[in-house]
Image (tube, one colour):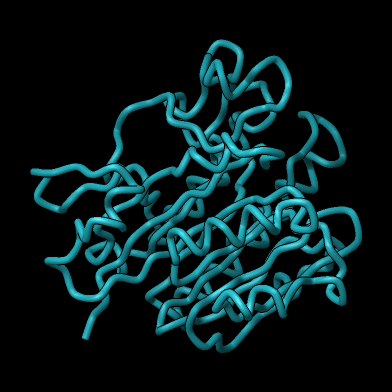
Length: 286
């Protein structure tokens, strides 16, 4: 749902951007994030979604493509420039924009990481950091330790980025459910479970303390609103999911955030990703 700052009206995502629900604001900048779980498979769905909703900026995760196979021409034909950082079979991130993309940064500076999980770029004066956070596998494993080290490196990087770019959005698949509202059963998804463990949530809170806000929670206090559902056990039909796809807005941008939400419809499409797009809308200054 999208929501005006006075709290007087709410709009469904698909109505908000087709009926001009934000027409009383200055020009909008719509920013979205989507873990497509293989861009090779999901390119038709992505193009359909871009055509229907026309976000200004989209961060993609799990593109699972080497850079020479990235569909740059197809996206340009659809009106989107792109910068990307990929690898074969796994990981991969990209930033798409309808406007010029500047100052692209590939990977976390100073952090030795063979996995294509992070990038940043500036679009229309907004710095966009795109993250595909490490899953971590399970507590006590090497992959879990790597996740926590990776998040420490992200924290230090974002501290520098915020100094240089106060108007900043950090988006992506965080592989962390922020609190108990973001899981279907907190007795299962507890302090000792991957994606909800004490250390993972503490790492996310440490990022927020840099001066970032979970944009979805500026508008939606209720639980059981998810962005990922397991393909198994009819997870989507039963709404047994997690909210792990986030857009964090900097303190400088927060007054301009006029809506945020989750678009569930692509999860209903044929051959869907297990994630669905999440978005925020900004009022443009000037």
